[in-house]
Image (tube, rainbow, N blue to C red):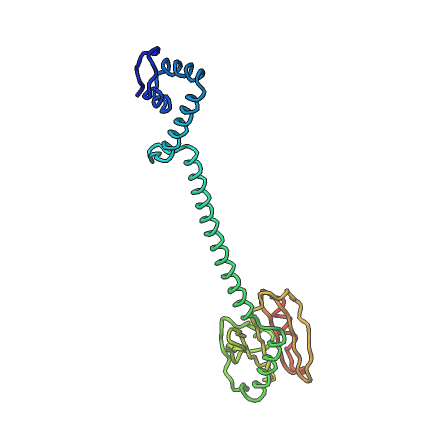
Length: 240
């Protein structure tokens, strides 16, 4: 709303307040500015009213008409908060993933059987077999998980899973050759071991161990050094 007093009528306090509020008509405002130019003291008073009016309007700004600068500031602040929440969410997700991977890696590492442990297990299995665990009277077994070595004269007589630790498992297969001498085959998970598809030999007294790593597994064939079919078993297994 603007005041409609004649432009050349005497100025009043209402005119000064209307000017400070920005509601004075352009003609009347021009007349007032001309008057203020001749009276510096009155000009300072009107300027004070103008500053006071601006402060009051800013203090009582309605939510429907927010100050542009304040709106921008709030939007930026909210944006930073949202970004902070998203960042924390991603960081939490990454931390959870890292923890899951660490646990999974630890579990996988705990399931691995070392070459030394597998060799020791093979020696123990051979000793038990030679002590009478299996004999010529042992029936031939059929097991889909066991390598078929019948073509080289070895028949399967026993198969079991041996626990070497809380999470370590070894598959154990016992064969007999035509002389009823035991040949032991052990395999275990070896996800992190480098592949060694060609077997290598170890000798422990009268016992011979033939070792290799393939298809993420360790293998060892064990038997008396004079047992027929021992090296042929390793050859057959590594050529599959």
